[in-house]
Image 1 (cartoon, rainbow, N blue to C red):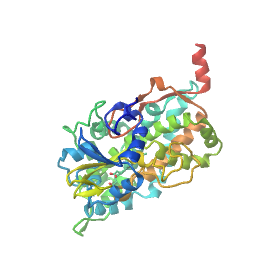
Image 2 (cartoon, rainbow, N blue to C red):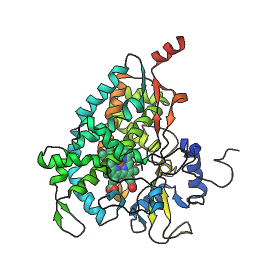
Image 3 (tube, rainbow, N blue to C red):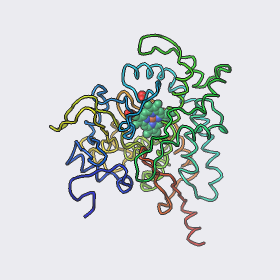
Image 4 (cartoon, rainbow, N blue to C red):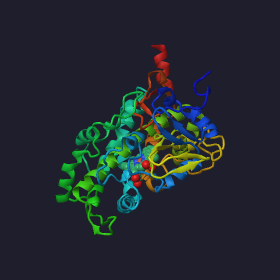
Length: 407
Ligand code: HEM
């Protein structure tokens, strides 16, 4: 009997088998253990859509103050000021209000031509050969470049910042994240912030320098240099791997649904709803965590203060009580809010940008590769426990496949 059907449901976030396909276990959790306790790692999990919204909507019971990743919540490590993703109201509200002023749809939309040009440059050389990798050729590079465009950091210096701040969230396969050397701040941004103080431009970094910030004490002031450094680091950390994984899932999911891909190819107005369905069907962040700040209860089971709670968003996105035929990928389904960008206070600040990036990427891919198949034998799932997605996802066009077969 398969482990996902034998005995009581068991979800191990580090087990590569569940990582590769968590959905059968998530289904069992929703049906048989909607409040689940994992003994081995000592955390709780909710898997139903409504319960996930309850957790993410109640910061007094389910706090972000120890982080939103299971390993952080368990580690209870000191979190430096300004890491607003790991705060609750009123501190979080103060940051979020100021950031919403600078993270405007207008600013995000203005990046579209540059994003399109980057995709063209990355994909054009691959057209003739008909073989490309969704992650290595596009997903791995593009989101970081876009963050560079947003913040005004030149391409050649992004790599150092990326190494500094982002790759530290990678974990060894099958193991929890090692936080012993975690640094919340990518120091690499420091030089650019200093430069921007002297050379203002029209980028987000300049806006962060100039925006009025009403802090949690009610004082209206500017962000300090250190706060700007922290905010830039959070944006780079939150906006990179997530979007990368979404591009990978776009490649995989549409390869497996060629009829729907053809519909999109023929009618590009379907791209936005296709991206929403991919975010529902294969969300790059399958789970967010919270610290249980006071005793609470689900289905008569007490969850004690001090516990770690996972909200399994990827499971909520397959909740049959919310989404008809939830396990079916259907770009034409009735639109309902998915949990791919989270929910509530901390719902993704960069969602407008992520949507632009993924829509443009898909459009530009289809312009060059109307059809493709993924080479799953040579694809590799990423090992990070935080994000679920592909590290490599090679693909080839029908013509390249025929060429391979004749070689
Ligand atoms: C497909 C791409 C993306 C996905 C799936 C995604 C997903 C998420 C999720 C689930 C959360 C909620 C975390 C929580 O509740 O604790 C979140 C928060 C956040 N995201 Fe994204 N994200 C994406 C892209 C981006 C981009 C491109 C940026 C910025 C450039 C960004 C910046 C942020 C920030 C700053 C937060 C914290 C918001 C807060 O604490 O108020 N994200 N994201």
